[in-house]
Image (cartoon, rainbow, N blue to C red; front, side, top):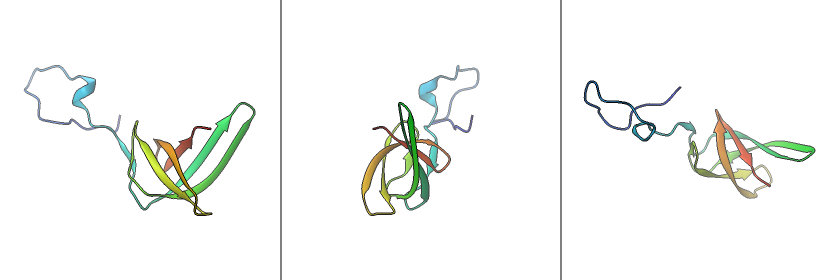
Length: 83
């Protein structure tokens, strides 16, 4: 799954979703692929992450033109912009 335990657990204790750390898909400063999709269209480009791309958290990305967008980290060096 690519996830790690957030804190030590006693032997025999059940593992729950809240015991796992969220994945970090990319670090601040890395180049990421941006994708925006909607009914009947898909646009892709690249940009530089201004914040770490942590699963389930918004991430700020500066596009090649200098515009700053908020997206969602969805994979390894990949983020989706929701129009």
